[in-house]
Image (cartoon, rainbow over all chains, first blue to last red; front, side):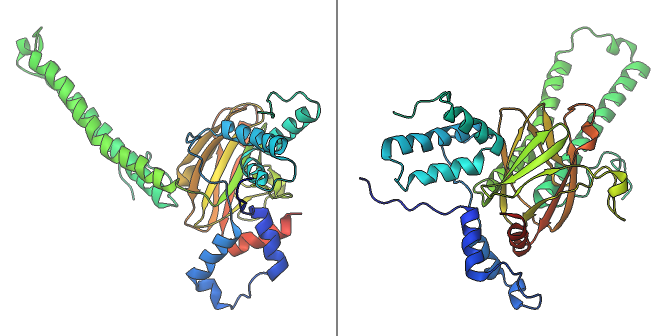
Length: 121
Length: 231
């Protein structure tokens, strides 16, 4: 088994963690943190995540990347098992890139056994 | 500022990149004016000049050479700022911090934010009876796209039916939304405010009535908006 890979949490997961830790209240209007660049930079670093740059897909059009990560996620589940944690990275990336109605359509095809990709290799 | 280019100028620009684009546009317009004046004067000289036989000369190799040299010089003058703009835009695209997915429909826009459930909404134009005082007609929408400022936003633009174009005039942004194709671009919005755009690819009867309203706000306000909207 390869070394344990830490999968970075997505924006939604970070927002959930932030809400549990700090609550969802807005900062006090008189707080001096509104004028501190370090505070804004740290919040941005802690809170926001986007799929990293993939050199296999440098083009402006990313539908191939969307599809490739979707297939890689299911292939990872098939080959490495459902409880293999690093598979979640592929899921994070395709959920970041793919429009919702695309993945809904693909999930439907997958449940019907008509998805046009092989996951066993 | 009233000048010859008043009718040709871009709108007031709201980012540094868009200001460079504005300068490049004005620069090209001035080149166009120069070429127009030069060619007009040359025609006037050939038509009204007293040297009648010179205008009837059949072979004038030096003139042919000039017709090659001058356009080349003009293109080289345009090349330097054009490539500089491309390079500067490439620097803006190195990394992204947030992904916004834009889907064009007939006749509205849909927005999704990364993988946040609940942050999926449609953006329809407000009709006249829904407008409040000060809201622009044919541009205001019922659900604005809210994004944080000074953050690299990656927009993934696609379409669910016909071809649309997601365009923001004052930020020099325009990208086609095509069915089955996911076009992306990255942008960093330095100014807090509300910016409007319109669909810029003919998409049917209500092509003029699917505007884009982008609300750029502070990251903390964006965070609170997410908390209030997501599931």
